[in-house]
Image (cartoon, rainbow, N blue to C red; front, side):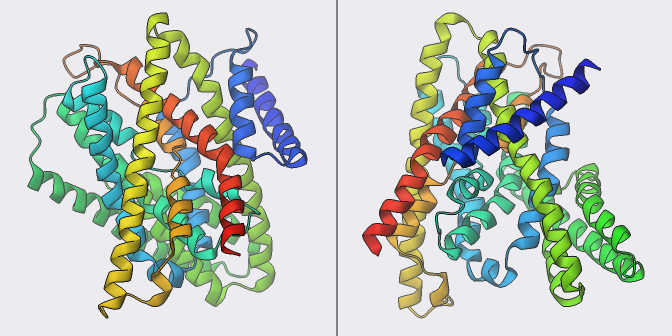
Length: 415
């Protein structure tokens, strides 16, 4: 009964904070974070320990499915070069960059542990960026790139994380084997998504006269697809994204307009509740992790987190501007790059500044093994979890509070 009460209190708090944020014209994710941190420090508030597997299963599939369902496949394909560069190449660049900084900055941070930290913080959370910039009039291209990146980069980060943890536990890293495994994980997820999409399409045609059954299947299948893919040790993220893209195409061709409108409202409520809970829970975790740290470590590690946050922004900015330059060069060279894929410096800066960390980094960090296979404690686990949550908070609060102002200012300058 106590857990049930806590859940109701958190839900009520989340809804209330969202309403207040809207009235005050403050970004909802930022206010939810601050509310979560404040409530987490209250003595009467019991600690809520999150199960990372439950977090990934409950939050990721519906959010990924909804984003993939609503993204334009044509726009996704047009910007696929940029999306691929950010969702795959930038993830591994960020992992390496954070690892170098952490190894030389933090005492005791071995190379394998530094790469674990880098992998945890390598993926961005476009849900936060889009949630914060909603209503600011971001160009459609920018939103497509941010959402498209988030659909793929989670898979890249999870694969990088697995390799890094394996290195900590003593498994020898072989580049060609790792590359082959990476391709197999992504390719397997793509195949599972295709199969489940085809199966769902066939089932929906059979039950097409029953709207309730159709709506229920659309709600259930993202979770089922994710579970099946993960059970076969391939990317559940990619599988759900492929399912969402397939259903989006089927919806445009086959679903009645009345059903699409009803379905859209239903998913808006689902994503509103999930997004709100994500940011509130991130805030609630900080006081718990803070209690596990030695007092003398807290401020130095907050400083390390600030340095890592700045480094991730710098790496992202370099890669995004380089992508802008490469696209323009390829277009002038009459290679296969359409004019619609090009973007300007304003868009580059907004995309760079929108690279906030979020729920995936939080779930991966909390999911770090407590002990290794030989029974010894996982080295520097508390420090890595603290750094991860601190970077998530700093990026969401720092970039989140300034992003609306930046969008508006750059919009005025180009007007």
